[in-house]
Image 1 (cartoon, rainbow, N blue to C red):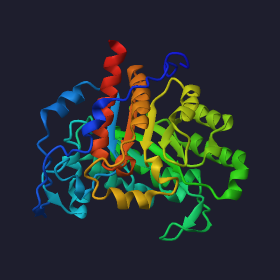
Image 2 (cartoon, rainbow, N blue to C red):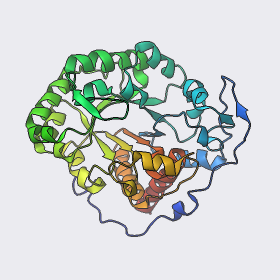
Image 3 (tube, helix red, strand yellow):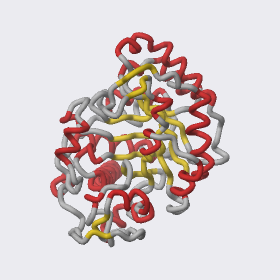
Image 4 (tube, helix red, strand yellow):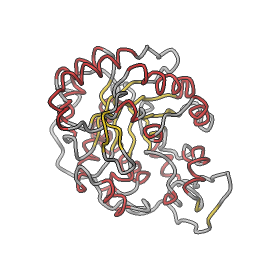
Length: 358
């Protein structure tokens, strides 16, 4: 694993595929549509050709699908955010490169079986969902509307709450279309960072309480994403290994770069890859608002992160090529436009695979 999966020397050359990465796929229409039927774009043939070059084990997608700025990139028309949120998933999954989506809505409010089932009914049998656990069980603090911590959250990493509010309804509603259950643990208060063995023990207990659900969701995995590097210890890795949980590689300025997170994946090998490309490092650890202001309406790549793209393409190619499932979601905050980032990442994956075989 260490010598053959991630051990080759880095290629210092940059892919030329980013040169036109800020170009829209098609021109957008300006007439606002209010229909409950969201029309997908008539995607260019080269996207279908590109999709055929990717491993069937690989599922790429974005974080959510309710972005009006993707008119001319994903949508064939100008739709409101509310219309896309309610009716856009079917059109979203028609994109030839989109085989998953990260349901981030569930982080802010637990979802019920009917809500998950409604999502499952809008996509075909080959689509898989990445779903975030509610902050009610993954945030150590109860926060106000501005995100400021008000008091300790007594439900933090509570196993019973995680099962009842997240695992069971997601499994029942999504069925075999469940891809990854992601426990994204919010940044811990500074004093709690001194108690990491206790935090990891609590996480270990939660993960151990999740029953084996592969008979219901054969492609389903449980993954843990963290926002404090203090979690990344041998005890943490052992807790994941003991519970057959994978590590969600979070590409975020608060976390180490890819090459410093790879030892955890090596320690858990063989296993799937779950990755969420969240935020461009140029904005710093707390730069979501800045990124949103700069990148909106998310219809072009503003800050190409070629280094991350090339490194991620290499990891994806190796893990998918070894027959393991790969789930990767990209945010608009990664480079400026998540769908266009998916296209550029797909090109990088293809370029790496072609170069490796030549």
